[in-house]
Image 1 (cartoon, rainbow, N blue to C red):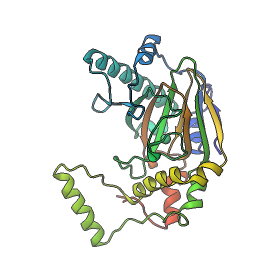
Image 2: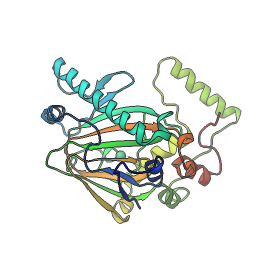
Image 3: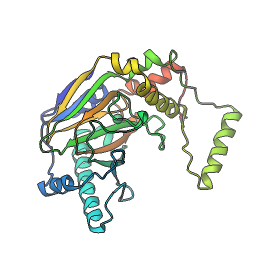
Image 4: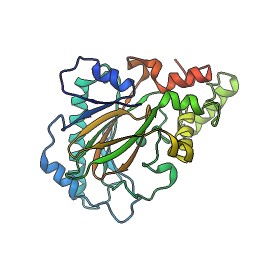
Length: 301
Ligand SMILES: [Fe+2]
């Protein structure tokens, strides 16, 4: 089960990484870097639109672009991009110190602004945030890289309510090879090479086909399987977390099963951490699954 570890700033250099890799959740009672009140006020003014199924606003640091922004007002768009860019920069700089073993090799992924009320949000089952799951990306294969997420509840009055349950290893051992087929191993035969070559040729023509490894295929199937599995959702032991206004938390969301039950207005920054940077790579979902499958699930160069 997951434990909440409150970070005070007095811990040794590897403490935070160690706790995250055990499947624990780092908790910060207040925002641990500057976050001007005027920026928070601007975010809280943003309206969520008529459809509750709309996507969160995403900021892509590598491209300095925002997507899913509802307003057509270019000035508001620019301001929103500037606020998300500043948040991304501050989180990255703070975590570069706190999680220094990861910082040299992680990829700073998207920043998201989540203006929707999670309670009662009407989404298709596989997109629902209020069902327990491990994160997996459908369009961007990770080949074993870890999903590390840092959240901030900017709602001035309402806590963000999460549940978590067992970590990846026991859940994968329960279902993989039983209710869900074991992941297929990397196919090194000429057929496997040919099929990868064909996919690469299609991609070189500009067709967006994700180059998924067996690891990515399994993680996606597992994400969907758990959300659709009523007995897992109802019977698995749960821990409840109420993240108060102004607090932050960080967690490996591919290792800790989680769901957001309620809360509105949060920010989130994702980092993709290579397995080679981990202190305990043997605990990573990739290595857990490779032990279960008895072989490689990503191609090792
Ligand atoms: Fe998630």
